[in-house]
Image (tube, rainbow, N blue to C red; front, side):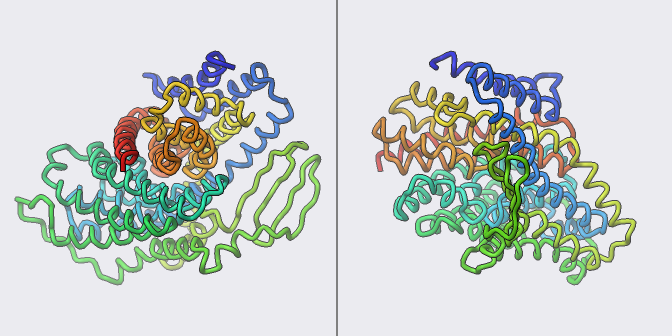
Length: 530
């Protein structure tokens, strides 16, 4: 379809970015549904897509919103329970007792703790848990949202127990050696980028003077996560983020308590009220329980993951032209929507909404001695916060479905091919940006790898580049794209109670993402000669 096809394909995305970032920005719950409608019109009139197929993808997009919105609702509910019960205040006072230094607090919670959570679960869980804790410590919500999005990039390549690698690249039929090669190169690129990315994230919250005075601690905290992350990625692609983050949290706390690399407080510190160990333990117990459940339900070898994702059909029946079924693990599925090949499924017990979020909430209510009035307040507040984001996410998911409709002739593939044709054998400089584009649309590093892994593989073979290096750059790009992903921005904004600031946040996060892409390009260039 040539240049016109690429221009028509890219126009809705440029329009969306303009609508959300212009001076009087259009709210995402208006801009995203409008963009989805425009892409649908273009698909029907220009690409001559089948109307029934468009309607099926619309229904699939509406149903698909259940996954992100249920996770966000679960995260908000837990956050409200911790806040209303007073547990969040206890956690904040305990963290201040470790260090009153703002940089130390941001690195322990926003970097190392979130790093570990990403390794355990993904699904936006790190920002959902870490960001409210930082706001509870007194940091500005919008600044925290930006920091959380930028920080939660490096670990994403191996998030949710390595899902973006072992599942995201599954369709390419790569052997274990190739996957480990991709994993180690991905980890190396991310390690180099991590020397800069957290610093840029911190600059949105604290001034450069504070960063300079605490730079040694920042670098030590970064390396505490990324060195074990890189070493483990050489032999395993499931646990680098999880284990790297766990080691990083412990070492960062020890370093902060000892004041290593931190600016010395020139004024004598106020005598802070000592918090009883029992109070801290009870306040932290919901979070510890959350992490424990996430880990044991994500590690395949323990067997629980298989039970929670069992697709063996329990019962099913026809609904019009579609077939609805429920598996033994309560996986809800709709196949052949409107008689097409389009389907949808929801892993009720595996998506981290009921387990662990709601489960932990139900345990926390008596544990934290919450009254009926406080419990009602938490649930009502959660319902109020998710209404407009649900509309935004429906628009985003329908737009994604429409952009990917058409296989090798879909708008998203036309844009990708145009990039490849323009760059030729210089593709390594731009490969990560294609991965980021996939995450921008889909909100998932795994989906980005599934979508663009094949085209990255083909480009590498066509222009004579090492396949594993190009796929590593794809993996890195799919992680860094989380910074600008609309779904993630809506999710963290909703959790922190931020309204109509999505465009402003994108304008801020795109800068560190582009820095990340330059670092990825340079390291990728070096890898070509190693």
